[in-house]
Image (cartoon, rainbow over all chains, first blue to last red; front, side, top):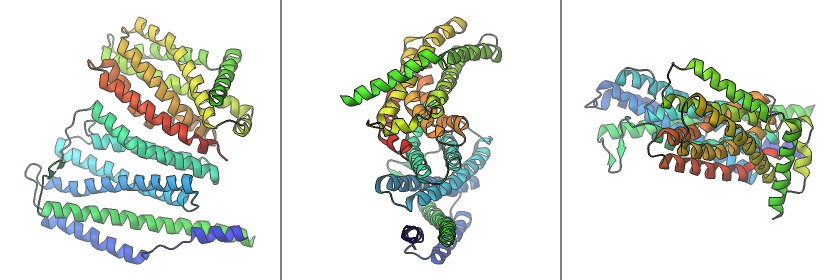
Length: 238
Length: 212
């Protein structure tokens, strides 16, 4: 009884920022970034109007990386500190990462079609990397749903999520090795080679995507925790 | 020193098992030969060296998957896993021994497969042999680890290729680059780095794969 109560307490922990406030902030930020992208940011000198998808494509890609890294960090906490909340948090973070990763593939594909006339380009490093990561993290879900809930599922999921963050730089190096680079390089060593409103727009879009991802993470986590809590309570009553 | 003895005993167990039952190696040899024949009919009449080298690596990868899928089957069928986990040895020794045994099977299969490839398609250079050795280490280290994960699931054999192939993409890049490039050095160095990195990660985290 006391063990079940402890689990319920641990699972039902509330966070510092209330969820409605977070949702409102992400709504404001996403609206602001949409307005900036379509009405304020100037056309790109080379690519014209179509370059505007960059603000979403790149910020979504960085958000996806952030989600995967957060998932691996929670996985590490599970293995290292045996934090009982970490398994669900890691899973939800990876899930959000996969959703944003799919969006990267979609936006990248659209951009490639408009810029180069093909829906898919193997010479696009980021796209190929996200395809590999997409396959990798889909396998994460296959693994997870092929195991009974319990410590073994927690361990195996955590170990596989940790492999993911190692795979990101290794795959990136491999793809660079395999292909020449034709992706437009936006950031150079001497700072961003675009300025003024373009930079402001990008920064707002980036913050908006990160806050949106965090909000979605919290919403999904709250739902999943509610499920767990309900199950625990049913077991206590039974 | 006792760690090395444990690894040695476990590896010997797997090799002896294979020697007596002959489950895996003949299947690998037949498979790789059959794949070459299929390649011959799938490729144009006089395939370039670039194309056949790529297909050699596809053949090696899938032959390795055959062995990796079988790696933990005796443990599962004879319910030996609990005994191994309870044995007073470091659990990473189980992974290391299984990797070494799989490496031995894969190397034995390649001793036949590479001359066969040379006979059917193109000559095999020194850089390719080096790439094969380096890639084998990575394939066996990561593949055995994932094999132990897959065998714990309901999906079992179905899951291993799904888990393994995304992780094998860097191996294929390094191996094909090492085989076809005029300057194979950095590809082989990349393979070596991959082996080292993933061997350390697998070695350190195998504990969690077998822990209940």
